[in-house]
Amino acid sequence: MTDRFISIESIARHYPQAGGGSTTIFDDLWFSMNKGEFSCIIGHSGCGKTTVLNILAGLDLPDEGVAVVDGKAIEGPSLDRAVIFQSHALLPWRSVIGNVAYAVSSRWRDWSKDKVREQAQRFIELVGLKGNENKKPSELSGGMKQRVGIARALSIEPKILLMDEPFSALDALTRGTLQDEVRRICLDTGQTAFMITHDVDEAIYLADRIVLMTNGPNAMVAEIVENPLPRDRRRIDLHKHPDYYALRNHLIDFLVSRSRSFKDEIPAGYQKRHPPVVRPTANPKAPEGGDALKVA
Amino acid sequence: MTHSLTLRASVLSALIFFIFVATWHLATSGSSSVAQMDPEYAKLMGLTATTGKSAMPGPLDVGAKILEHLRAPFYDRGPNDKGIGLQLAYSVGRVMLGYALAVLVAVPGGFLIGMSPLMSRALNPYIQILKPISPLAWMPLALYTIKDSSVSAIFVIFICSLWPMLINTAFGVASVRKEWLNVARTLEVPPLRRAFTIILPAAAPTILTGMRISIGIAWLVIVAAEMLVGGTGIGYFVWNEWNNLSITNVIISILVIGLVGMLLDQALARVARFVTYPD
Image 1: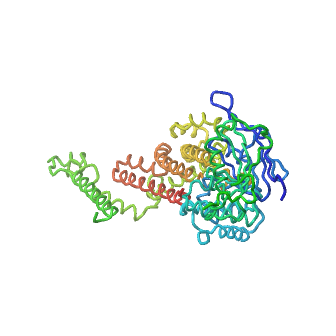
Image 2 (image 1 turned 30 degrees about the horizontal axis):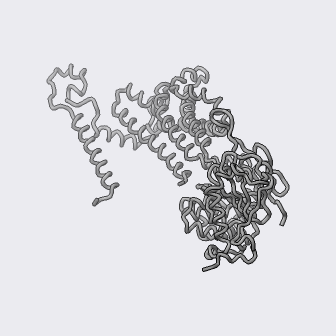
Image 3 (image 1 turned 120 degrees about the horizontal axis):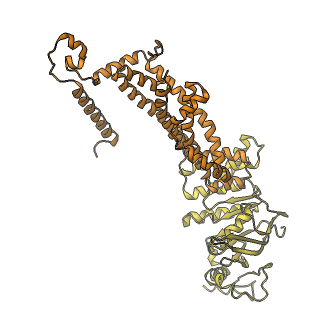
């Protein structure tokens, strides 16, 4: 694994205010992600999570600093970085396969029609939409539309998958199924992924590392949480893992109080350039045999 | 509800038609009182006075005349006696030509205005001033510069069809959803391909709405324009029949103008349905 596959280096973004002057969403923001890793970013609305994702997608540019992917600074959108939009953003005049094929033919312009169709078909089957190829997005349920969005993003075989709260508009059951599939696909293909979420349980289930952002304006990366749960975790027995509650409490505690108070009581030795990495476990002193919570 | 809405609506429509025709028939059937007069004087007075018949044709007269027209719609016996079908064909031809030219200018122009905020701001004052001008006000200028009455009529159609299409295209293009444009951006779609594969289909329903408004206005204007320029066309036909005092033919023309206008609108509605996407 290459270290620091994605590196965000001292980026800042300011928005002009109505009465002159500007609001700083964040500045001097640093963090990095490794290849094949699934990272989630958690924070309250207005902390600039979407701005960070848009900068990674190349849809927005930082006012200062630079975002580096695979050794190259991001200067604009790229087919190497696919985005799954919150609102799925399917083209309503194209069928399911038409939407996916549009992405495939944009990626490989010299491919024949048959080859494009074959690739699109493969990814439609991967997200479990076989038999719905010729339906229009309006004929699909919210979950199916987002599946098409996922198929479209994956079909161009991107280096990085960027997701902006992809499941937030879905019901709990559909969300669970889609999380399972995204996790399976990312693990199988070693996909590097970056996801914005509000949902702590989603982050625990999916992410290897969770970036915690404090409230905006002037948001900061408070810390980077390493997920202590095993990589082969499953949704159904996730909560039985000894470290589960330690991690969950840590995240919720951050969202409830520390996201607000962090700025006022910055811990000693905190460096913006190297946000602290923490690994919440049931028994911090003896991480190997942490069975403290396994009483029942 | 025992019968379907469509059935009840059709019955009501038929009833209204029947009442209308019956009233018309009764109103024009004439009074029974015929003045007794000198036969020499009666010759001067015309049918109204001598037989008690109304000068306004009744539905039976109009019906008979319609059959006559249907039997020979395309005859041509000199400049003042052409079949109504032929006159209509002239009008539709002019509308199509002026309208097609307007499409060629308005759709690319609307794209330019919709995609460039600079062009939009710069051209806006001209559009705002030119749009409310009655198309017929252009006629003298057109006649003076073009020096051909037939081409002038086409120019007037062009001018009046232009604005609704231009404005609707610009609006449709400018309000394409940002998320669709972002899809194109993340897929590195080049500008021309983006215009044809994202912006055009996304804006097509709005463009078609503009085209429908335009064809309606064009059809309204052609009648007036042809009354002015004369020579051929359904507008000229109406005016000519008025000069002939053939109210029957005037009524038939009105009916036919309405029918053709409806057909033109329905044709574009068909196309609109084809490009509309459910969201």
